[in-house]
Length: 266
Image (cartoon, rainbow, N blue to C red; front, side, top):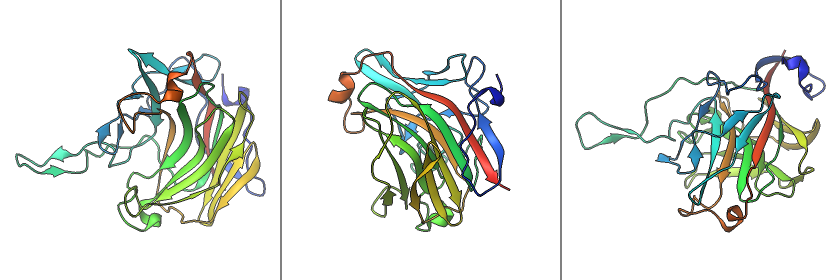
C-alpha cells in the first residue's frame, strides 16, 4: 500500500501545503525508525506503559491494544522524541548527587509549525484514554513558553461517549503550570475521524473532520516538538490498581490509527 491508497488529508483551505513527514502504517510491523515506546512519566517508570501492543493489522492501520495480565492492565504509548525530564536522571560521577536529566537521546522526528493530522477510531471499552499530541523536549525549563514549548493536545478522549477535547499546557506541571481548553467536542463513537492542528506564529487552530473546532491564540511554542500517539490505563496515577471503570473493560479493544501526517505551509 502507498499513501495514494489511504484516505486523503483534510487540509485547511487558503494555504498551500507540502507533506514533510508521515506514517501510513503499512507493512507488518511498527517502524521503529520513526517511533519509540514511551515508558517513563515524570522520572518514574510508569507501570502500565507497555513495550508491546502496538501492532499493524496488515490493512494500513496501527492498533494500540489494551492488554490485561494478572489482573492489571497495560497499553502502549508511542513518541517520535522524548521529554528530557521523563526519564530518571543519572548519578554524578561517584558522588551522592544525581544530575536530574537523563542522557539526551536524538529525536526521531521533531518539527516546528505546520499542520499535524491523524485519522483514527477511538477505543470502545471504558477506563483507558487515547490522545494525539505534541510535546516539547524542554517544557517547563523556563517560564517563557516560546522558548520551552507547549504541550499541545490535538485530540484527547477519556470516555466512551464520543467526547473529545483540545488542550494546551505550558510552564511545566508544577506550581507554575497553566492551561487552556476547548471544552468538550462531540464525534460519533465507533467511526474514524480526522483531527488536525494548524500551528503557526499566530496561534493554534484545531480541526475535526476538516472543520475548525477551536482557536487558541497562545502562548505559542517557538521550538521544535515531537509527536505522541498515546494511551493510558486509568487508576494507576493515583494508586497501583486499575480504576473501577477499567475493571469493566472487555478485551479485545484498541485505539486504531489510519495515518499520521505533517505538512508545512509553502
